[in-house]
Image 1: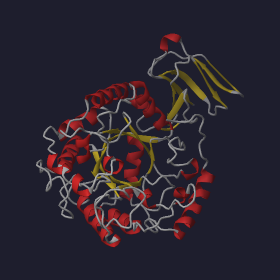
Image 2: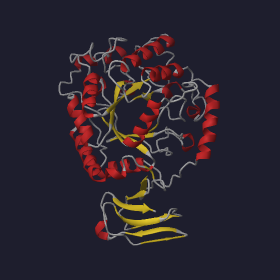
Image 3: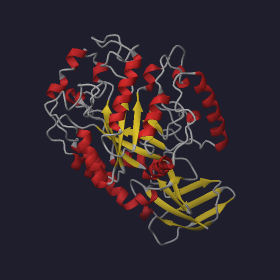
Length: 458
């Protein structure tokens, strides 16, 4: 899922790109919160987010009944009237918010981001904006987001809400975007009414559930124009998302609330963190990811799946190994980024046992090695297949991922005080000259998942 040898983007290029972005956004739809100046509370929240490093993503909705992922309505072109039968079967009696939060906390996660409304238009919370929600349209009749908010507060876990900008169900999501075009039963509507609907729902999410860590937007790309290759990257839209109004509303209701938008382009004014879907920052192995030239200066978050799916998929056998998942945590931190790792709960409200076990394995590793991850910044070299580095003050942590007993860091800068194994007291043999730093590691210290060397600078 990642490329090797990606270089850090220097500050000058970031500033130039930022100025160019402001010029482009002034000429296209989608301009964000104009003249946005983060509050003290917001800046403090960004600092917390920067240090958190690990969160739980939850994709859950009535689509879980079909066991074919969260895009099943689009992928199978299920008619509106047929899909609207699903809530009548949705009765997740095994859902336990306290168990979910404990699982996340034991995994070393500091926050949870859950789908409040996905592209199918079904709301997983008690909303007055539409009866098409978990309280009014299911036999379960309970607000799972309310229960999760209460459980998170008890355990000091921050709660973020995923919110889909696009909607395959509502008539007012019109004109249609790039997806859902062949779903039968979709009618014409009023775009301005759709914007008001979203603002009403966001107001509910930010006033009825206590302090919210952030809003995680998705679907912006559905309205991007693709008349020429790669035009999606320009951010040009066929319709105005009214982001100025939406972002201002959020920051007015809860100034500390962080805004992220999964649009795959450079940050838009008013956003507080930049996200990268299924790719490390600066990598674009998916083809829809964020290019290196679009990386901004906001806090980073990478989102990834444990298997190959976001929503529950009965046939998904692409389960990542313990080693792969831990390496993703390490590499994300090596870019100075959080990792938001996804689970797709089953329709009964339980999380797949394989996912629970994966999270436990990561939690056990973080119990021993979390000091090299939490609160750490990116290290002196960007992650590769073989190595990643993180740094805290005068401590540099070198994570050796390929079980090599030698590491070489070209053109290493900094005066070395000592080099040892992480949590070890015996110095390691090393050479540091004009070519770089070479460190020898005893074979007995090599770990099959991650060997950590600690470099202390003077």
